[in-house]
Length: 329
Image (tube, rainbow, N blue to C red; front, side):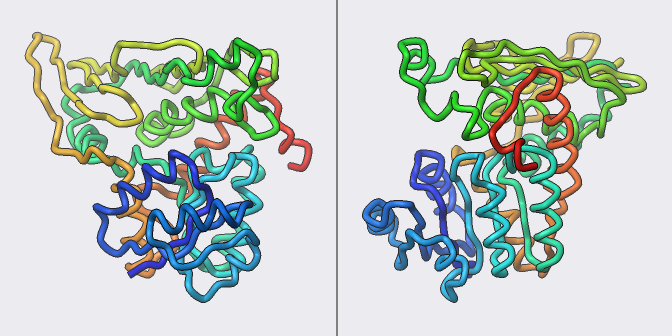
């Protein structure tokens, strides 16, 4: 049994704990919040024994083996490194951190301390994504990829009314690329590696974060377009086009359904059964990796996380997306 502490008492943490109920080997032991009252309330709700409002105290606790971090993006690096240095395994919410130097520091700290660091990106572990990879050869030579995650933010109306919530604050390393674009990038980088060139553009909001953006990733023999938005919706599926057919992906972050449409019009459904709590797969991979005595996931590797962080860094440089965390990088 892996004894978990959690950092963050928000809706993503609640989704994580709902998924954790489906995973063997998970035990919630501790909750951290800057407010001890809030940590206590959350712990009582979910059955945790220990509560902390001091992160260093949590990091040295003998009652915790691993920590799930769901704090604001700007805090990921500092919190993760503290925990890793104390010998805790860390499952850190996406995006892994604010910038590439932070990502490199986190990976190096994990390696130096012989513990597992994994970005909590569910895509590489989803059954339907694994099915996609299994059947990818059927569409022949890949020529074009369109990967997108455009979803009108539930907080955008308040933003337009003058109330600036965390989702649109550069000091917290937020915005469309960080919150949604990372989902669109992950499968492209995982499947096809690093592009030879990147050309990016974005619509910037008055707070300094991006409301939406796109990037053209060029490879030797294929092109991929990445699009993401918190200020508009997109209804069409993402698509991988090959010379013999195309694979359509319903909702790139969840991959609820995947099918092949061949050039002759024949359709093959390659969807497999998948939980309504898709975060369970990343957690199961994280726990299995620890139990196997490994310090790096085979599905969601350090290399993949660093490559995505590097591409995101380039996109940010081209679009002028600057965070407070960059000043210390």
